[in-house]
Image (cartoon, rainbow, N blue to C red; front, side):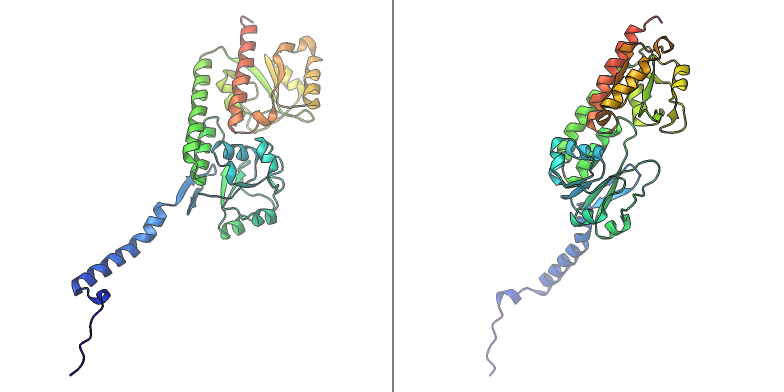
Length: 318
């Protein structure tokens, strides 16, 4: 007689139970990729590209000063592992490794920092960055986010999107909500005010200005100002002093700092009565704050609007 074999408890399941277990396992295998995809992070950048990350980016390289400020505003400062050479705000950014000029970054340094996300400036209409092998970075699993806020309202939107990609959405939403409140207050305060004709100067030799389609043009409109060269087709057209005098602006705003700004103001004052803008209506703005589409630009626009409003009151009736 053969000895009776005792079955272990692990093999004591009935056939229906085994079939149910196999069905549950099969269902889990089917749902696992879907669940992983549902947890992926999605955002759209300013070039219209859809960005997908499997998880929030914990290592980020910023290749533009405004992008660095946006990331800090989104609460993602601790995730930044490298920046371009001109990122100098907030002060913590000065301690980070440099990866070269934002338009010509050092690809080897970027790869060595092992980022999961690189934030670039989508300057002009193109996305190419000399010296940056986009396809190589993406093959290494690095996602590229192109940033180019064109209106003041785009700044809080950008903060939220970067907060989404870095897992700091809650902090980003708080900051974005505050900026939107401030923008709404500016729009309400200066809506319907008497227009002030202004010339916005960038650089001196040669001298450039801006048209109305960029973010500086949006700031001027928010303040109730009329950009005397706003209708030009070029984003940053070159102009001469004679052209400015013909437009007869009531205020001249110089987007420069340091000795260059002082020299620009002195040059305009030398025109004397030929210039409609009296000395009180010639002033400079901090280019770092006013020319970088980040949170500080909204604060700079608040100050700009106050100066333009002072010109409005001073020139009432002229």
